[in-house]
Image 1 (cartoon, rainbow, N blue to C red):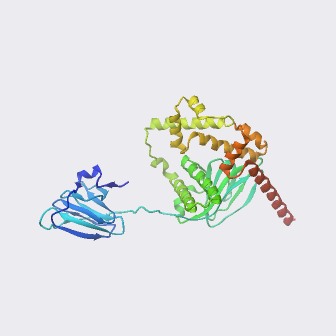
Image 2 (tube, helix red, strand yellow; image 1 turned 45 degrees about the vertical axis):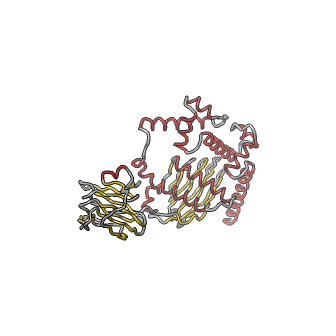
Length: 407
């Protein structure tokens, strides 16, 4: 993050210039972003930015350099090596020397040009070709394909078998796998298991080598990745039923952020920044894991926030803070999310009627359960169940057609 010339850190180099200069001044248009020299004035020099945005690079006595965004007119101390680098295309700067005589500036040549890296994206998701939320049940099998674009699979519930380049993998709930362009991949479900998962087919202008550490890798979702996939699923559902401005842009933004977080997985241990001390951080992580396990183990009970606070002897505000920090959602929403995922899985198993599923998950009203389910998945439980049945019939019909062709 840039410092400004109004920051306290700038005081060792100069100060804010409250009054306009009464002495020699001249204006310069500066365009170059990679200077190879610094200038030095033997007297204090007033610097005022008239147009554009620029940073002031100043060099300390022992050669280290600091950068400050020029904010308000400044008075730079004498004998301070400096240069101005425009952040915009060009800048207009007024320099005033605090003497009635024009000054000849000293020049310090640098062995290398100063490196300025503009803040702009290094890659972009250029197209989302298709995305869909699939629910697959007993003995689903996809023969496989390869294509020239990227494909991401995120498993929401259950287990999904994946074969990539001849190697088999099993994706479980809240796991991600990325198929590279040209990779042949199959998907399947064995036995009575089931799965619901998100598929996104997209393109991006990125070097494949920057993604190499993700090839053929099963990725466990971090809280940030979980939030982004959840946002993508929710927003895609909203977009299909509401004409919301810039909805597609937002979906691209979610996906691009998700890809960036995946890329950073390689260095996340080295780049992780903590605001608490290690003991506090470890305590909160363990507590979060214990609370999550408690909720999973009691998912068939009507769990309340008060129940969790009593169980772990913590205050409501502490509980809210831990969930906000780790999952960016309140604990009540997290409980409902897990209950909805469990309900979806139970409907897929086709072992219980919907009314019994609602009661087992602690919902006293089938209508309230249906409303929550539809808000989460875009379909009422009965519609969801019918869609699975229809998809199974279509799959069997297609398999029979294929068998008939072979015979």
